[in-house]
Image 1 (cartoon, each protein chain N blue to C red):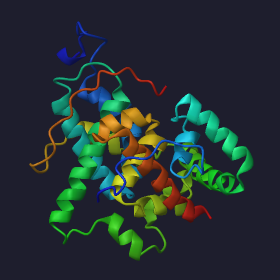
Image 2: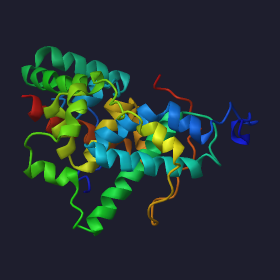
Image 3: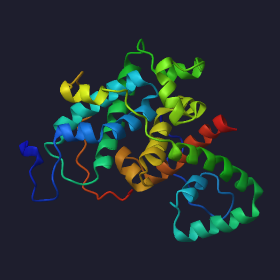
Image 4: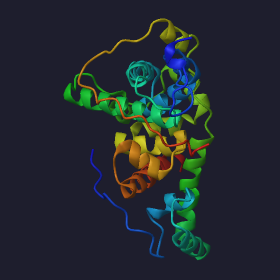
Length: 174
Length: 102
């Protein structure tokens, strides 16, 4: 057993990095996929999140593991969005989704089974700020208060982004 | 992208508009939730919007997890990732709040 798995005075056991990767991998992958919209970007994002988990576990105090991971994942996603904006040659899949909404790549077939393809495509076309709010609400299941904390924005903004995000998505279902 | 409306006016008894999602999520306060319920009972416009937003919400919430491709997680565990680039947002402070979503 790693020393990290010892019981800390403040709370329950702190998981090891390997435990987080193995036990939370499917959760992380789902959240990352709903944000990134394709498997290649999702896998990069999950790896980046796990790098941050490695550093973050040193100070992690047992609490909401999903809340903690969701915060790291959205930060990593939005950092990558900003990084690519600074280097526009690396076109975001989210940006080309608008102009090239044709058949999904072969590796998207799996996800198409999970969420109606037109909804996943619409999700990918949402502006990132709206997409993140909708994913935290409807995929992670966070309360508006928790989303406001995660994104460091007012609850009123969370409420607005969730509703406007869903309103944009409903076009895909109409 | 920045949000043009940084705050949303609390529900005032008229059409629900941006309070519609908050109503569905049970995120309005008790009085507003009740007022919204009564408004919905008589407003076809808001009922129609409620139905369409609810379909989106149900589709998202009902979708099963996305399965990682076989072996991906094992491979990540086997080859611990290293930082790819610098300039990232610092690690968030750990969230001590108990998980209220389960």
